[in-house]
Length: 351
Image 1 (spheres, rainbow, N blue to C red):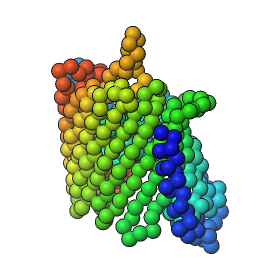
Image 2 (image 1 turned 180 degrees about the horizontal axis):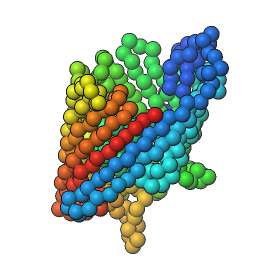
Image 3 (image 1 turned 120 degrees about the vertical axis):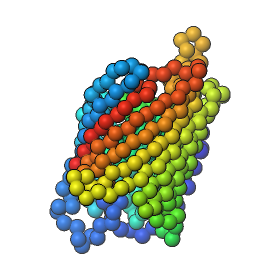
Image 4 (image 1 turned 120 degrees about the horizontal axis):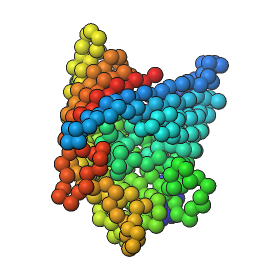
């Protein structure tokens, strides 16, 4: 397993020799040295506030919640050295440190990132809260493919007519709070994105993590196509466990978004429909107290979501999201309290 992870880095290293040097900022945008002024070193402050109300008809109960109150600080200390620090002051009522990394741009198209970050894996799980199309994340983004860890990544955009971006990294695998632990096993993740034409994206991902004794291997393929006023997206994830410690997991996320421009208070109104599903899953940590075998942490279910989003400004800047989620559980499945049919009204503001 260590050899496989090292090969991932070795495959990216030769690309350095083919790149031409030019500095970039934290977002990867090119910076001309002669145009670099003092103001380019000033940090930028961004944030996302998501306040929502949920009502579950089966329970006859509702709740108000601040889902996110994120604040981030980004900037450059040198033309080719950048940083980011992000904290969530209310992740469902808890304070969490999310991103804390330094990034360098040694050559054109190449990035090296060290610190705490979301690992390069999947399409939907990699979206920030303000970039999400629905009030609640898909099963892939929340349960199956959601990993944030501490490690080192290399990213490279190939200088080809067909834009291809490759990113891979090595990580602790013990999460964000157990960084002092020593590890004999290596966790890795890699992602490749192909932009075939304007609006058409194909993403391939692979991930191998071992949170406890059992190693989990995940593979993901996804694509989206944007044309006229439509955004159509589909993603499939497959996960297996070493030594058949748990059954294989499959997850699907598909959705369609249509934008209708408006001219008054709202700039546009979006109509959305989503279908996502997942089979029984174990997080690799929860075990039976007697046998020590992995137990199910997320049960098999299907979900259909319909929604309307009203945008007061540019896309993903200030949105009002109204969603209805309908769940379908298998006979053996146990529905968690917050994973049932619900109506969600959310106000999202990005600054």
